[in-house]
Length: 159
Image (cartoon, rainbow, N blue to C red; front, top):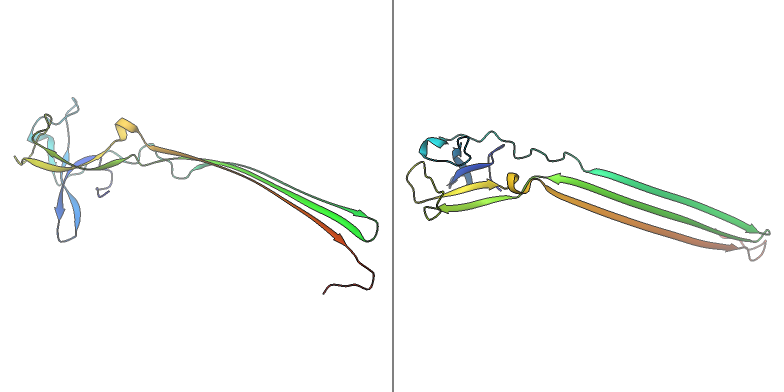
């Protein structure tokens, strides 16, 4: 989603020269939480709230592994063997919150325009409403290998 670093909510304009959205106004609401008039916008500014607050740099990983191997000879010519491999892994990570670009029009009862326009494209992150996106993954595997070897005769050799 195109947005300036660290911005949470801002009014964007499409720049045809770069084929990208650029910040036109930062929305700086007063303590009440919503913009009341054109004075609550800063032309070309960015909001100084981190869009990545509460996210993880790397996932937490919990890993458990087990390996075992056994061989047993029965006389000089017959042998059986086997090995077992077990692995369980759980990882969790919190990533950037969901967001999007929305066209807000004067039909919205909370719409305020710094320029008097009838609509604006707004970049919005749902950080306060939803928090960071969280994902969890688990994987578990078990592998077993069994083998046997029998020497047919003392003169039989494999190369």
